[in-house]
Amino acid sequence: MADTFILLRGLGRGQHHWMGFAERLAAACPEARVVCLDLPGNGERWAETSPLSLEETAFELHRECQRRDLQPPFRVIGLSMGGMVGLAWLGLQPKAIAELVMINSSLASVSPFYQRMLPRAFLRLLPGLFNPVWRERAVLAVTCNLRRRDAAMLSEWQAIARQQPVSRRNLLRQLVAAARFQPAAPLPGSNIRLIASRADRLVDVRCSEALAARWQLPLSLHDSAGHDLPVEDPDWLIDSLFEPRGLM
Image (cartoon, rainbow, N blue to C red):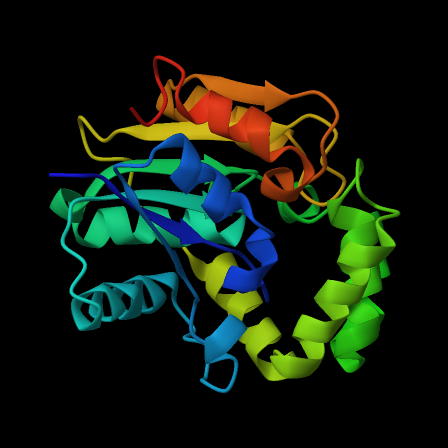
């Protein structure tokens, strides 16, 4: 049976923010199916209410897969909070997840809050709670290093924000869900891959290092990209996924 990759974005982001990564992954693995799912409250599901628990979010993704007739097991690639949702999904339905890739992710039970969202980034993003279009300029500034001056991408993100305006209420509910998430230790035999950016200016790379140490897992590190690694260097990321301890 061909692989099915499920791509999950993080806080306040939707499937259109992958910016071509899904298409690149599909080209690299033409036998596979690549599916981007939006978390409730984000992307095309922006009008829905975000759950207050990541387990509930994960269960809703399970139901979405059923509606689309997507058959597990899945290979889940989660960026930031998307990786946390993938971990919640793995805990709820371990047989449904063949592999989980967590990119620039973190856990409250492992890392302090001031590493999970760096204070300077938090202060930069805070005014964006009140203006979705202005928010995109701040998000670009704190999540990208290599493309932080990409005016065309900023314009596209601002257009997405106008079409799919994630509410301040849903952003806060997602933050609460992420802060409350207390997963059990990975199940024995769970296939989890950790990838992070050394130069991440939103989530301290020490969060991924702490997960790697806690779970005794390898950690693949990019030297210069920012938090939004799939946008910053998609080719490097795809190459990393196909390394010996990667997805294939």
